[in-house]
Length: 275
Image (cartoon, rainbow, N blue to C red; front, side):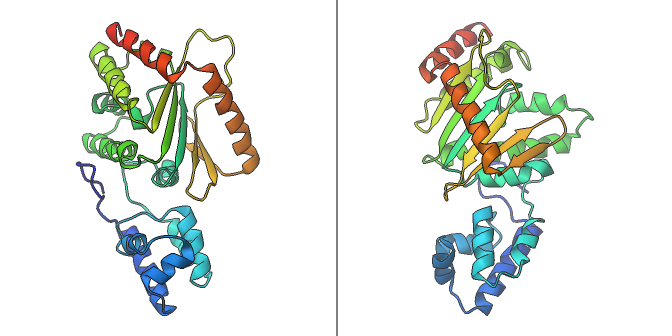
């Protein structure tokens, strides 16, 4: 479950269970939280939060704890059942978990304003138009999960965010003129954050490296890269180094093909005047 205020999410049964297993194995090996933290490369406060079911363990922590506490496979198996935010699609949850610790996050979106940049009204239009239809409670659940994810932009000032958005996404007018103006205003506001760059890919572009579709790339604190590609009914989490390299090349080319952040802001301001 999540809170509506963007605060710490309520602990789920799976998180509390994972935390209890971590605490039991730590104590079995006679380690304090600080000692375990030194072994796995995390602070004692992080260990405490995970043991109390308040924090989702990231993949690097799971692997490090597995090694430090006997390599029994317990953590890897338990991690497969971790859940916290019911508003997120099952295939997206692992990516969302990686987002929370990323130090670099790149997003290219060709279909719509990406979730991290959506306003509530824009997001609710998308949820309302989903097929099969969602119930009111499901729409509310999905918005709360999205609003929680969006806090990353402000809560992680040391994470570098770059977004490349297609110009035609705004010309589509999703939700009508008022919703379009509102989402452009919001994106202009977010673009003023020091850790955020937003670039617009102009519609009139003879060469485009991203025609194969949307993609996201992120870097973990241990400098491992992952990618995520989403389609109509599911998403693919990519960890293979060769595939990541290909996506990096494409994203780098798109950054050079898109408008600069300054020109992108100017274009958004012009579109905002006549959405």
